[in-house]
Length: 475
Image (cartoon, rainbow, N blue to C red; front, side, top):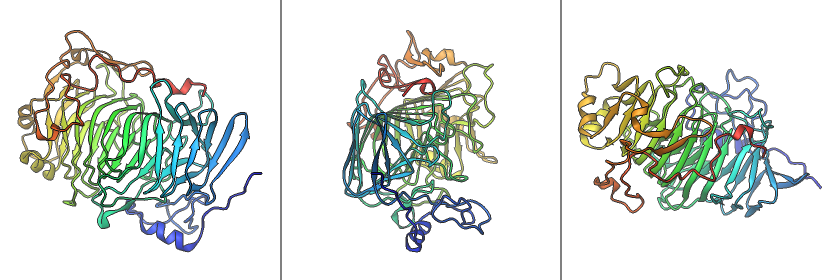
């Protein structure tokens, strides 16, 4: 028997939700009648909240498909012998664990803006394998899938963030808070997982990312993840301390790796490949890092440590026509303390923008670092904010960073092939040597001390589990 579910309504819940939406800075009000805080007199959509159905149900739809909806206080397992359909906002509450078997396929319903949310204190155990990755994808037919077909995956943890009060509410109309004081907090495991055609927009500046990590602690495992054709950022880190490895961003709409609100984790072996036709009106970047939205001195500072990143932008060749909304390989702004080492960035209108006096001061003090990186085929190599006289080129050169005029000079086999990229290095590649791990930030067992720059040497760690053509895969 199918249980008919009632939406969560009520003035107490709505007051609690709307009060926590710190990311919204426009006039409050919601003109979407499907949201729980719908206001028919509102002038514009802003801070609309989409709650789940309260009761958790699994309904057999036939043909080997089961529907999941609601929010669960109990532990649940999704088995690989069934195809699963997420409907609406599905929440894993504190104390509950969602286990997903290797090889499981989970689709997101488009009409109900399906989204998986793991609240603080909840856990996900999604440990796929190279041979049997776990796949989250669109429920639309082959050939009709698009960015924003469903929401995405949101993990919320108890690790520190730099928001006022030490916590915040995740953007995108989600009824979930994040942040706390437990740097070692554990939200579970995501390993060998693909996330495709996610990133549904709820209202301006309130999209859901492919994988959103809010205050996620370093006890969590995030390794071998591919986000493809997402409608906003592939990955966004709102504070937290989680360390990540082997992340792939394919042809997403906005930024590849967005980090802010006090994120202090480590990251190694990240690769992004852009579709030259797809970019966001807000300006699409490879790395976009802020301390917070206002560039304050709130602590903990956003201070991620990244090594062995490869970002291949839209400009494969000088003749490639690209969307005018593409901006920068690296946009470091708003008082971020980012540190990037041993990486390669290719084919953007601008290579590196150190934006604002606070970031310039951080760079001079050694709190913002870009070292031993290679920039290729940039329209403009380095840039500063309008009116600034800071000598970024000297700082860039002193960091051991270099540039080449053409992407072919990198010696990478076929990094711009959207449906079958080969990121391995050819013989004599300039990226094959020169990496180093001498800085204190890199003196950590998390980092594999490799000799090559960028995310790949001679091992193709995307083999077997990544999918470069999800549009045409008959899931």
